[in-house]
Image (cartoon, rainbow, N blue to C red; front, side):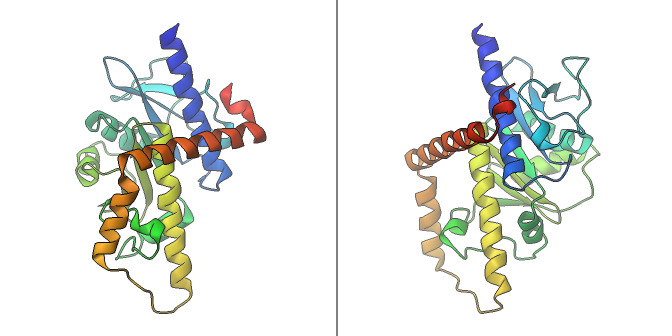
Length: 246
């Protein structure tokens, strides 16, 4: 019973992340994906069925798949092949990356097209100072050979800008991956809004950027922030539509 309860809790959190992705306007039709590793001797993860909009994802219609692409329930539908490549790569090699979230937000894609990448223009942006990885574009990731390069580019970081593509975050939980994505995307939006003014942009001193990033990363402060934000988001979803729990 305990294992079933754990599996249901994981499914519920992941389904919630998909609904939040839709709520915040991060959806790219059926081409956005979030995955969550499930406990077990062999690596396997949950991901959305290919063809479902994020607003249609529920705890019960998530697909369980192993890192070789085998569906663990043969009656499950297929999954996004490009999504499988990205998520299986990270779940295989980053054991702390329990949840992997990839988005094609407008702000994320725009900053991913800038040579300078993400800039420390605001306190939010400084949280990611020297903590964001970059992966150079090499086509839609359908070839499994790119998995090694994706993992190498990510390294031990929790956030990555996939150049000319979008954003990716990983976390020890759905809550943490969502937290990173929310603020990484917000940092991209702040940068674009500042650039729109056409005025000279103020860059803080490197020492202040490093100090601010360390403050945000303080383990107690970070975990408390993740937990409080996630519980608030679940309350929001339950008020709007709790069908994600089904």
